[in-house]
Length: 313
Image (cartoon, rainbow, N blue to C red; front, side):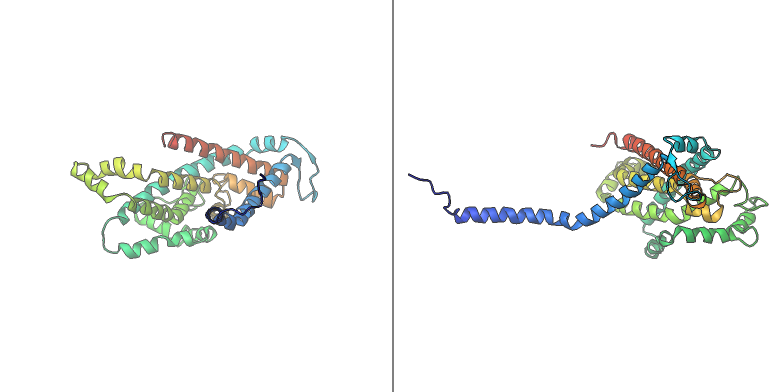
């Protein structure tokens, strides 16, 4: 008795096989649609990083040669770390980043809580709130540059009306007030972004939970601390990480407002990288600085994620 291998499958088996194939294609179809974008994004990220890593080990100044002149190993990294302004730039960057992130998150959360209240004019306020975020940072820099003018600027005038002393050289001309002035400009642009994200997160908090806390006698502060904040912890952490990374690489506002001055009081790592790469054309040193900044940011973000999400399930 011979077994016929060419006998067709039963109709039910063929239908089940086609249904499984169609289901698999449907599951893979979204991934196929986004695959080109993902591949392109990875290439756009990987190529500059690889280019910077490779050239960070070479002496290459484009004012001397269009090509790298020689292998120097870790010489560029040593030169960057032991440079006269590196530690000053690092400290300025940390002060700008930590203070700016903290203030934007705190004020953004306060504005979000205010938006959740049923007050007159909240609807147009929500629409107007996002407008500063849509302005390019370079434009914000020019806007605040005119607002900081010692003669005729609205901010020095408001400070004088409030009897707050203004430096003779202006807010941007004093080493004491120059960095806080950059923080204020960045806060004006990005605090609304934080507020909108937090407002959306607060809207997702179940109203029943808030009412239950109030019925238990919890105050507004206790409800915020023990109910609302834990429920929006992930959006809060995400916005904090995002603003930390963006502020750590601040360049536009420094370029327009102070150019690193007065002296080196607002010299940041981002501006130092611009100075070495696009002004002095020292590609090798700028590449080494790029990787130093990447490593520093990743260390901070890794520590932040570890301590914030270590108890998350």
